[in-house]
Image 1 (cartoon, rainbow, N blue to C red):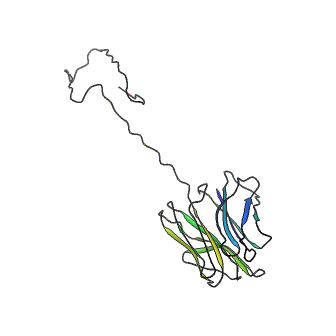
Image 2: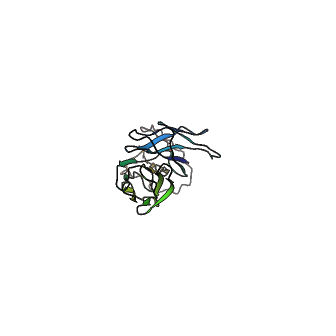
Image 3: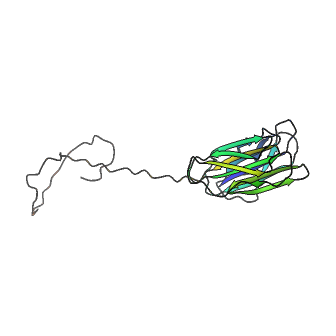
Length: 232
C-alpha cells in the first residue's frame, strides 16, 4: 500500500521552514512529493510504498529549523500505485487557502495539507471536501490541517480545486497530491497469421475424393518469417 505522510509545521518568522527527512524502521526511504513554504511555516507531503503488512510502525519527521509545534497525518491507500501522480503547491499572505491540481489518470483522488501561521481557527472547507485531521493550536496561535476531495475523479485532465472558504485574512501554505490507482495491464492480443503454399486462385484437379485408399504425401518448405507453425 501507498503510505503518505502529511506534515504541517510552525517555523521562525522571516525564515523558510522545511522538513529534511521522513523515516520509519523497516520501510523504504520516504520521498518528498511536494512542499509549500513561501509563507511562514511549511506544509509538505512525503510518501513511500509498503509491499507487506505493517504493525507498530513509528514514523519520524525531522525539521530543518528548530523545535516547533505542528501536525503529522499518516494516511495509507490500498490499491494505489507506488508513487503519487500530479502535485501542486500554493501560498499567500491572505485570502482563502486554495490550490489547483490537474489529474493525470482516471479515478484519481486528491488530498492536501495546509498551515495557517497567524491564527488558531477551524477551517471551513470548500464544496465536496472533508477535513481528515486538524490541529487548532491555541498555544502557538497556528492551525495545521489535512483535507481531501470526497470522491475520485473519473477523467484524467480534470482540474481539481482544494480550498477553504474561511478564514481569509491569514498567511497560509497548501500542498496537494494526486493519489493514483494501481493500473491494470491490458493484455496484448496477437492475431494469428495464416500462410498458404499455394495462391488463392489455384484449384485442385480433384476438388473431392471418396478417399478409399490412404495416400501418403509430403511437402518441404522453409519459413521466411519468425514465429511458430501451428498447423499444415
